[in-house]
Length: 309
Ligand code: NCD
Image 1 (cartoon, rainbow, N blue to C red):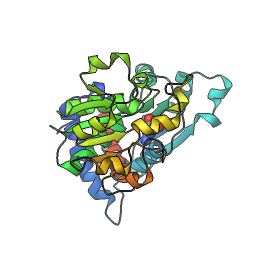
Image 2: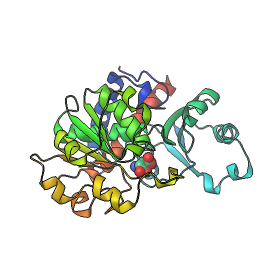
Image 3: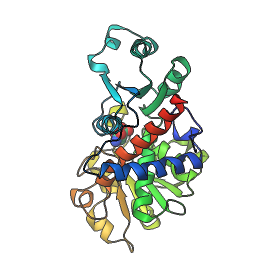
């Protein structure tokens, strides 16, 4: 039987092409399951999963929780605003206390890059990174590629532009790794100040003109400006950002082909994307959310089968 090459999902950086293939094939099966009248399978009845969220989340937290429940796992939810972390407890102590209650897997979102890797070295549980600061967000990149595969038949050979705040985005980095592993061409587009200096080393194209970028691509993944990670101004005003890097219907209609529009959410309507684009038939934003549950079921199922061995 095929299995993942890793015991944790810490980042796309640690996966290989076969892992992604296996996750997608497993997600195909679970996507069929969640469209049945009875959306649940008993696969993980003997597994307990703790969702530890040290940072805000709506979609990702609900999506993981639903995925775990659809697999019949026991689920514990923890968010740092209500926890003893505020009383000075360390991350390792917090997690070890939770694990002593016989928890098998930890899904963690944390503001510090590398928090998942750190935890995986110090605690006995399978760790799933649900976003570590501006570093990686592997399940988001997996569900993004899975949604491209569903819409366009394959990721290999496709041209994908990631637009916006590349510098502060964990979605961007995980997407770059995932898309390249699958043979897609990747471009980033945004204000120069929001494109990291090391970008050349990642082997992606860089474009600061949105019209040119959209004319080049098959898929545009629009990112939110991560204001919460900025302590200085990276562009003159939101209005100017929108004028140069926001996608609107007029711009889309001026292209000579129909491109696919994606966004990881939460969207800021009227900033990086107008409502008529977000709600258009070119947008697969809600398909991404739906696919997120099947992808997370696949990841958790595959990691759990390694614990059980
Ligand atoms: C993203 C995140 O948290 O990194 N959202 C998500 O998980 N769907 C993107 C964002 O916050 O802009």
